[in-house]
Length: 166
Image (cartoon, rainbow, N blue to C red; front, side):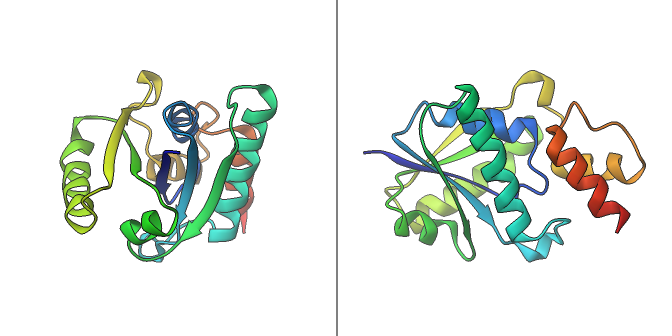
């Protein structure tokens, strides 16, 4: 059984993230969406809220048949390689939006491989309509009451609006 981890802060979860989750589920037997605590990024949503959003959206995709396998959603802190080891994962799935992402992602993949040589990093490119979409951009547009409906699911859009009001 090949287990893979798709890690991120998912603050907020975007259509690009969901696309990578659906595609990653096709190349492994077990997919774990690893929601990183990563308080250094000063997230808009708490860890619990991000876990709930991911579970809700994945469940909707499973009900619609877009995702056919069971996917675990778990939080983690510390090194990704430790989380991978704990879950017997052999692959890390990373999404690439644009060439600008590659250098950083390449450094992370190389570091992870040095720390855990049997752990492979697989890169999936974002769908072309999501190439430029970053969670930080979504939050910025939302702060100025811009339309984020093409970036995030309706439930996530509502959660962002509620969070920014408070």
